[in-house]
Image 1 (cartoon, helix red, strand yellow):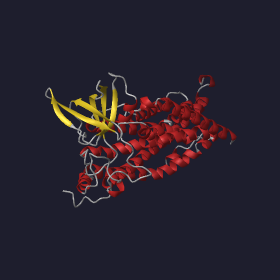
Image 2 (cartoon, chains in turn purple, red):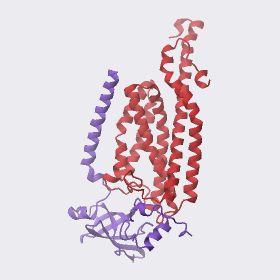
Image 3 (cartoon, chains in turn orange, red):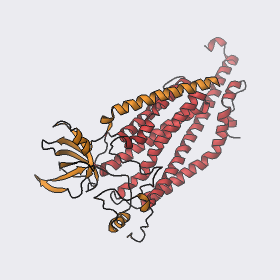
Length: 167
Length: 267
């Protein structure tokens, strides 16, 4: 009995030590664990010019301008997080999920004028899943504009009947 | 009655008998439960997958690609849950020296690694069309990859020693150390910026998923969990019986030379 107690105490002590060590390490490396920086973090301390990093945020509604650059599709848009916004330019094909109001993560560098030159744009989808009929119903009733922000509380739509609207 | 009676320990193996008293009960009990577990696993998984892959609505943004969720999410849950079970078995093995825990831990490893591998593979297949990348080194994906390597390391370590007892001891320590990865996986999407989205199903709020998609997901997750448990139980039964047969053969090898050859030949 006492030997079992002693082994349990030993395992618990090791666990606490290890957990603390892991927590300290991860919080110390928190900046490098983060996958991207947000526009407001960028506004506080910008990486030096020419340094490649990832910028993440929501595509600002009404900011997307698609053009052609030497025959290749190009896009200019603004990425924001509610506090700051950064202008992004990208030459290439945007992912299917790219739209106004969508979260994106772009890899690139800061240009001297403070805009962001993206080499790669990844779409980040949020944690909501709904059928097209429900999204259409929410949009039609004016309760949700996908380009303006996240959908209304899930409890108001996740049991919505789509039988009538479906087709 | 069944296999447990058929391979009774040899006479004179009193210590062995005591040691396997508990596994004997496990064999009898699990023999009764296993067919039900397996049947529930197959039926519920089939129902959940057919419902999810064919009848559930497509997502408004992701279209039909969202259906890979009905495999990806259950395997992701099982990857973590399986490792938690592995860590609990390791704790029981290290602290209470439970004889079944070592066997169960060794058998959970490959099944959990398969679930983790499936989770990573389906996640990669899902990531390319939706995010635009097969793989990114964000905190969620990286911590699950670490979990996969922990499983592989455990599989290799418990089988790396001639003395299975030492392998089990080393594996148990690795499993407990690796358990620190589980909260990191769970909270990675909240603590850090990640490309992977945060949890849809939380304890605090309504799931941000249409119920017509949620039910097949739950069904599929329940079925795969039953399947996971059934495979682990079947493997553990096989391991118990294998150990008994080994003990029988070892006992016979000990006994026989005394009758036939001279004791000098034994060494």
